[in-house]
Amino acid sequence: MSFDLHHINAAIAAHGAVTRVVIADIKGSSPREIGASMLLWPGGQSGSIGGGALEYQASQAPHPGLRRYPLGPELGQCCGGHVTLVTEHFTKPIDATDVFIRRIEGDMAMPLP
Image (cartoon, rainbow, N blue to C red; front, top):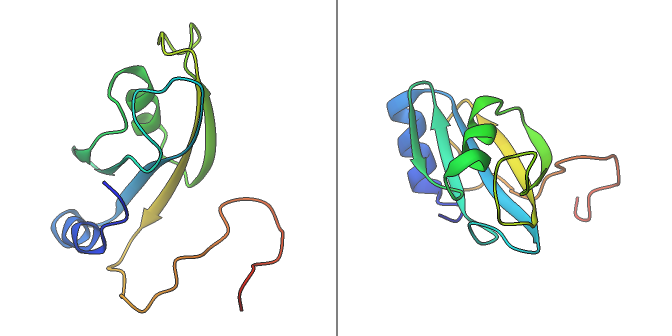
């Protein structure tokens, strides 16, 4: 699932606040591709970032920001790669005119005003 504005807004309307977790980077082997994502809300989920231990970990502590996971023995997975996840939290519907170029971490200046 890519950034599907309609799907996210429908989930917000149905469930209230929604958290989106997306695979932003992969090094080596991964259960899913860059851009795979899932939406989380209390008691539910839509989409998948690959299931298993990675998805479980991401859904247990969905704090906004970047997280990097080694897909090896520490996580109980055999992929052997590394995955970077971006987690975003939405509390209200997203207007189609909103700009979705935003800082995930760090303090470097934004490229556009």
